[in-house]
Length: 450
Image (cartoon, rainbow, N blue to C red; front, side, top):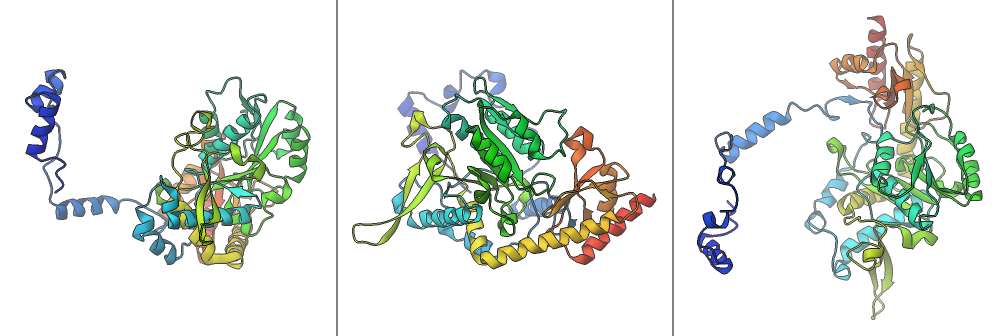
């Protein structure tokens, strides 16, 4: 048992502050609240506590037990055993943000490798390390654009096809910015409209346009023309990516993106009931001094040996202080390391193979589901590994039936979009076998027959 202070230590501290007892120390607290009677169960031994916690955990249903077709921003991918094995090394597992960074060469090298892999994947110049998740990374793109224009441009355009959680987080982050307008995703806008409608809203007051690739509905668009139009009015383009899709798709850097953000969870990070995850943030070198987080660089010491340093530390506790554009204090170092290990293990060909498996299996599933009476594919657009299905019944009812068959169904889009009632977003990854997809189709047929 850990006892923080012994009785002699307590007596010494009480004497130092000039009181005789703990009771005297807390005398200003109303007596009725000093030592309230707590309704706690009897104490358990370690063995009894472990048995109880294990019993409670068995009530959870998860992707290892269920066939999973749920995505909407977090995906069930295979994670090589080496990822977890390396993460659990003590020098990584217990490390925190280095306050004397040059001493922590191993941590700095791991971050440097992560940044290098992300820039190669996205086609951008630099990557920071890192943010809490895709939603906060997207919000930080808004923060960066606002400060880049020194608040002189006060409009951010974002369509409803961007993840609803990301849009909500962006608006929460920027709620206190004076006269800043976040528009484009109003309730009357058709969520399944193509991003071209944003062209009519571009003007010289636009600071940033945010689009998703593939978008929240799984659709793939070429944003080259949009990026060109945005740049013509002097604004910036941020692209929210699924990083795994970039094993197959053109990187955003090749069609004019200024900022690339996204959720790094598909890169070797388990679902974990929602976190911890990883916020990816990459940009062009000319915006380096406006980003939050940190940049690790490679250099040589006085003896000519290779070493790693914090090239840029934008944290408010460090060089920028009151000039910092963000209050980000922690990079998700362990999660960044997980994604770096994952990408290193797979390599270019391995990442492409996983992306191809996701693509091919999703298209097989879409073709089979589209042939079931009562179901149809709602979107006529190229997609990666998610697609929207129109269901004959309420999605909650369909998912309840699927769960009876041990299947975790798709995301109910009606929860976020009133016009998309009975629309289900289905995700298929390399983890889904053909037999599982066929089982999904059989279960969906049963629903349509009820």
